[in-house]
Length: 155
Image (cartoon, rainbow, N blue to C red; front, side, top):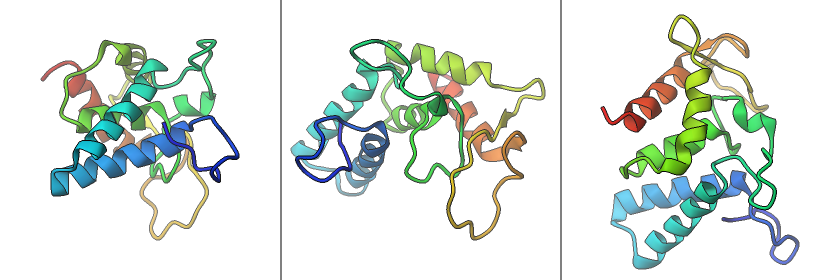
């Protein structure tokens, strides 16, 4: 994984930084074909998330942040498990068994009307509103979750 702290100030990797780098590397590879180094770095970063089930401390198995179980859009630089699942779907690889718990959580958040809610709006300038606010149905989270579930179920 990666960390956004100044070099030498932290030895811990950050899910927030790691997902941003992974998204960037994936787009770089799609555009240019990538390099052996970019492919290897992306594989290591993905493994960092997978080893932790997209949400857990590797040492204790505890969920790192309950915020990661609450879906946002736009995500900005923040991590949540839906963003992690989206990344793995976007790679074109098949579902890894270590994603099953996160997929189950995403599935459990589907409302009776088939939609997902916006749950965790992050602060920052909004040029035009995309959603009606936290606790309300979210077109974007619904689209993202349906894509992930379709991919995970193989259809």
